[in-house]
Length: 322
Ligand code: F2R
Ligand code: MG
Ligand code: MG
Image 1 (cartoon, rainbow, N blue to C red):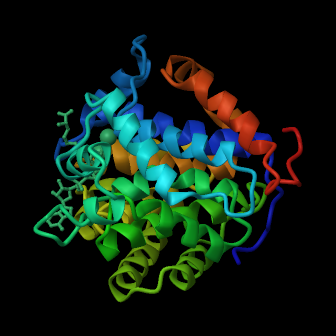
Image 2: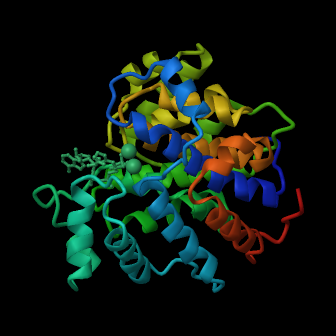
Image 3: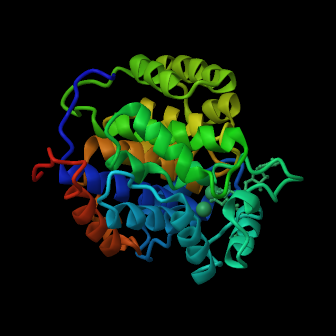
């Protein structure tokens, strides 16, 4: 377990939720661009406009609400969750969803069991996209161990991502969120140990190869373009979750810098920044985020409310004000 274990405070719970939403909304205008100019990103940060979130945050909200409503030992009812995800898509199909997941949601809304619907995409292979990972961070708030976080993450991914890489992506991001949430920002993060802990939670050779490359990149202080080239920046789980981890591990103590780095990897910028932002927000807390940016976030009130509910969750008995 990553050294310097910290109590989970309300500030960290809120940081995880707001950091993810901020990464998503700030990154959204850049999604699909092969590279992102620092001046364009700075202009987006200074603009007075509302920061509109995409499918990443829409489905994170659905999952966080699901977790907040359940105080029983099981915590995750995958049958109910599948319907809740599908309803979130039906309510706002314009939130920038891709192709595979809406197909699954359409089938679920038509009454097809999720076990069948999630296998109906990509010629029966199921999706290895990053959609299960981009929404998963809140499971860390109700998990009682690293392995429990990974297991909850994987299960929350199953209704839409039946391919093992899609599920491993969710397990990896959930485990990373758990480690970040429980890390102590007063002490330097042991990056190598962080990735070694993830390798214990995600037992898959292609993922371990990515963790090894991420270890080298963070050790060498690689920039965002280099990281995108080495690890990927596309909408697959394997081509984006390790990139988001590297953004966080390069700037673990500064959530804004983590998000900027993630967006500047280009490609699937909203999603890489949503995942990286959730990790940095969970470590550093909401109080370190720019108030100006948070006040522009469309979902800020909803996320504050969910943080209040999840910080009072029976799984978080150690929550203190902060
Ligand atoms: N898709 C987008 N953005 C592009 C479209 C924007 C929109 N039309 C607009 O203009 O506003 N963003 C969102 O999708 C990503 C999450 O994807 P998810 O939910 O995993 O979807 P999907 O379609 O299942 O997988 C994503 C892509 O991965 C490739 N892929 C997945 N499984 C595959 C397989 N078995 N074989 C081959 N390819 C596979 C495909 O290219 C999928 O399109 C996030 O970026 C989110 O922001
Ligand atoms: Mg999106
Ligand atoms: Mg995206």
